[in-house]
Image (cartoon, rainbow, N blue to C red; front, side):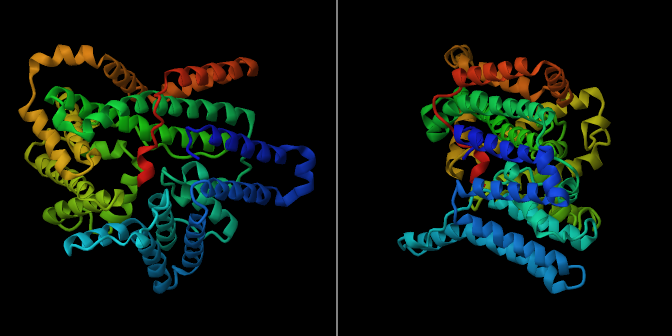
Length: 479
């Protein structure tokens, strides 16, 4: 039940309707002090119903992680065993489901054996996200940043919250659990604002990302059949496809949560405007990069144990970040590439004092150069992130650098003008400031309800008319 499906829209409407019943004065009086609890139970039922639509068996895994988090957090401040068990068990579960098939396949390939199909494990959708969220909760309780949640209902709701369950953002307990103690629920204002945010994300996904994906998929499936210019267009096109696909999902998640009365943190902040690789990771997939910094890079020693150790910590952190995306050499290569770029950037800042960590500290010339260099380095990394294997990534690089004919650029522009148009729209969406989006939402909310309802219908109709004929799954569902 993906966000861009009719089934989800019906499901979300049903959840909103059920929660709205608790706003009726008679229901409020009848429930009394149990009002919040009733809403939470309704939401948990919706969370698990949503996950059942993917695979009902995986609900037991989600429930198991919730039990582990509850027991471990309740005891981790006074028991090292409880802390270690709370960290190790989720990692073992993640490792088994995410990497078992890879290791079995590698073992069979090494010894020339046939892969035993019966041992293939299904990758539960979203397992990487809710496992990291569970770990952050347990570690934060141990560090004293949050109190252990005494209510298993609230904890279950936090871990299984369906808007961000399968592809994030990864939400910290300190950001979400306090909201469960407030009178938050479906309201007309929340729904109007949530629907607008959701529609903006839907537009980025089904209109921009999916249309570009048709072209990108064709080129990446067999890059040697295309000229270097066309391949380069696919490389740059993938950068905006991935952004619109993933940030579109994040917008829809934030919109759904807002409609239900809850706030989720933003996950993107114009990442292709970054003036350094370090700044890129402060703007791209913010919840994951923050998680890696707080729960991996800093515990490894961060920058507290000398320059060389700092470089090593950066590379190791990004290698593991690449491995988090999947058990494949291309992800490890991509993560290692970004780790080396971060280490190199930190090294160069010592040699060139004018090179700063972020664009806010740079002079104008350095900022412009930083945006240009950072964007192209990020696109270079995306090649191996997207390619089906390292060999395909190497073929793409070979086509770009050895089979590029600049005289064919006019033909490429005219031949693929639709792709250029979609990319342009994608970059406009990318560079639209968040505050401008919020002002637009506030302006629309001031319209009469009938006008807004008609506007939503028109927007949905337009999106359906220009969407890609091929329904593309969300890219980050595979992680």
